[in-house]
Image (tube, rainbow over all chains, first blue to last red; front, side, top):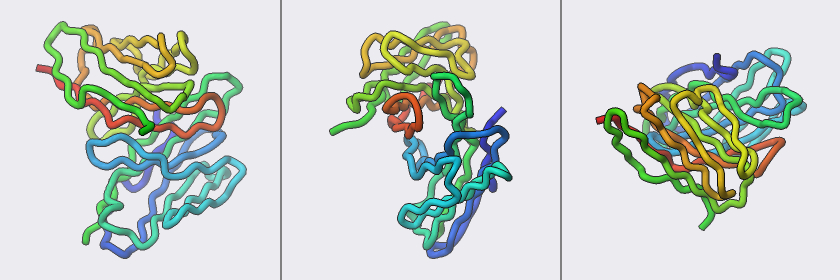
Length: 114
Length: 113
């Protein structure tokens, strides 16, 4: 089963509005990352937040993490048409092993209308 | 110009045929990964390699095989045992163990004739 699940599955807004996407996960994590994917392309890393951090900013992006609720949110402020893409959260599993891998959610498809 | 390249962009497979997808990186990263993405779905891990000459099965390894003979290369073979290979395949790399940002290639779309 997926470790991370994004909500909503799809979001349509007007240019200039803010967009908020949520991610819930099931087990303890070390870190949570957000990635962006334009249609038919590879993923691009946006931001990483560690399990001991509560909020992080990068340009127009703000990410929060609530480990007690096992959830994270990605806020994009003053959205632009170019922000139209799918957004994925990815979590690593908190294990003592040496192998490191991420588990991705199904993504939120954001459409920003000009 | 550093990054990850995947080839070909589109690949067609006939019934019973094995096909190999190429993934090359010049980022000097130790770890490499292969994911499969189906329409409207997230990424599922096929295989990953933390170091040269070593690789591990991911969540959906059946019907796939990999090799890691060189640090910069991690080819994926889709064998005839994979009955539903039509998907978008993404290769990624990361520096190594620990807190890891993954860098992705542009992807290969595999279609069955």
